[in-house]
Image (cartoon, rainbow, N blue to C red; front, side, top):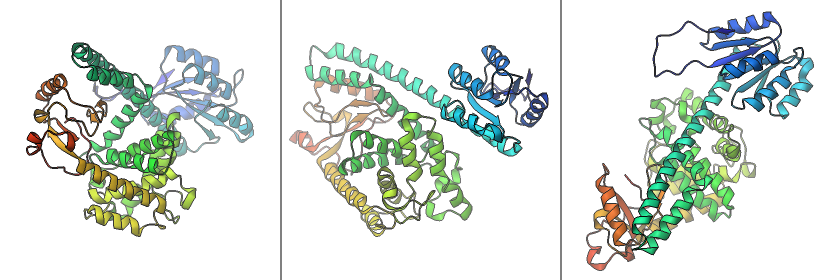
Length: 464
């Protein structure tokens, strides 16, 4: 039996309302739940038992199930376990009395339900739990859609690269090897996942007044600091992912907050701001692969002296990845102007971090960050920006050439040969903005050195 709010005017851009299935053997309970949810615009289906509900779900798509625990024949825990097996993407909520707490705990431990609500329920609490579960399901579906999209795009790029390799294989063995490596890299699931995360982390920065490039800069610095501190590859990857996603909890901030430095927030804005690490963790928790990343995101505003948020952790009780992210995030925030009203120079930002040692920051992390910054400055002096029109055979790529989606097109260290230079010039001619690369200064022929642009500091070569 279906029930829904009065239909709104037809709009093809608006998704259909979520479908909520209510399961209880007591008609009075079903009636009460139906009245409660009718005002929320949900489509309501109901059943008086687990078997009837499963039969209904075979023909009717359902987004969320709210089931009573005690029902004849099949109890709520057994019913929701079957829902989990048959329809794993459907959110599951259990209504239970105090006497059923042992069975409820067993259901939770078996992963059969997302949340449980004690009877008698509070209407507002139940509405919030259902809204949160539907929101989480929406995030999971959107992530799956983005992952499928990036997989299709990567496959198209692999096909293109294979065709390019076939055309130039007879003239350059070096380019053939490079394209083969690129094709192999695209075949790796890890590359697909990293690309999906990169695309997702850029959604917030598309907002007007967003911090363009902030997450990418923080991710690169944080990964290098983690490597200098001796973290293994898996831990470095978690730090990098956490840096890419650390601001995902700000997705609900209005444009005014995104444009305002944190130091100028009002008391109400600061309250909202201090919730974003926990909101970020909650957004990532549905993904098993990101549980470690989610913990770093939650703790990245904790302080060494215990005066941070949201949990007031201190010292070594804060994850090392979160300590790294805290220092790197604040450094980039100072030099980009997002953390304070004044834009700091690199030296002034270093002084601010040095003043925060043993209060805000782990001293070992700050020392490692300063060494990484020194290395980046030295690397910047060793390479130079070169327009694609000025590429010459023998020049060596200093930074990875990446697409706007973060896919590595050419790795650092690649030596340019005439066929590839021709292809790159053809590609650049079809781009709306100039294509610029960074090459090692020492690889530039002396006759061309005077025409090249001076180095502009640490940067990552990108396709505009």
